[in-house]
Length: 514
Image 1 (cartoon, rainbow, N blue to C red):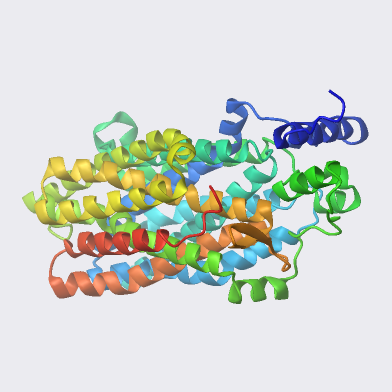
Image 2: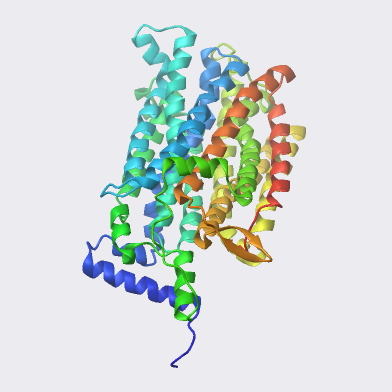
């Protein structure tokens, strides 16, 4: 009927359709995909780098602590080795994101950076399990040199993985329509969990008992090689999935800019005859000085979200980094520094493989929960889903610390999977929500439009910097606490307490109706 007011969905469909046909007619056909809905398989292919990253995280967290302890390091020094990646991350992850926001390459803004980071990850994964062999080959046989070589591999791998994690999500959301952004994040969470599960299952296998094991000098070398192949396949798949619309093209032609909520709301206002604004520049292309100002002068909503994410990672990282050592030493009563083939050493190895099964369950539960988290948000809202996800981890960690038996360990791993799916989906959805509305606070129940330009990629990567800061603190403090207490049980109580504080902080997060 003439004069009928269109709904927002109808307006969005029209905007996407016009841009889809325009891109197909006026530009290379590789651009038009940005304005259409992606199939589930396309979202999977777009997300496969996350599989490699999560597989890498799994292998790192399962084996780095045992590798460093086996070299001869005490817990205090071993945990301090974990401090190097977050120091580098805090300093350089935001810089990488800011540079990515401003790249003017024909290949896009995100993929060139992802390629460089992917190559760095692959090189780091080659160093990590071979520190002793490399040191002995070049004549550096001391514990200090072997630990240094291993730490270089750890730092390169961990920093590159963390920077890639945020950028991969940014890239995926930018090449998808706003209707697909929640779908691609949930897809990443699902198959990322499968990647983590795969990494832990690699660790649960006794490779020395298999025929292929004879080609590797250690069980760890076999696990890292399998992980290396998964990472390479994921990197190639994601980088060749969808082309980006280069920044100069977006600046020259408004019809080739991805449709955001801000553009949709402006179009709705224009069609209804209301006052609307014209976008004269892209908020993403901000200078480095502006980026630093945005970091220091964050809106209150971003500060609270960053605090919540910081506390969440403070609760997750003690479990993530030291869980295998906790199970081997406390649940199985083993000793990683005992003579090889001694009963205590064998028990530790058994505990390590059992812990990998538990962490595979954790990753599997994270994947399964990611399938329903979007529906839960639609049904009850993001706030209760966020808070309950954090409290699940709190309860699980405290139960694990008090009871310390195998069935409880397995059950608590599944609760941590719920928390992991929560902290790697809801904060990113909230940032996307803030940017799509171009608003970071509300007055009288209404969104107030922001006048300060903020880079979406930079804000997403700020979550990575928060993780780096949490990892730095955990790395510097946890080893001292373990040595002071004389037991690794302390990690469960620290993790549970921080998760509780994160749940309290999540109550104050700005959700804007999400």
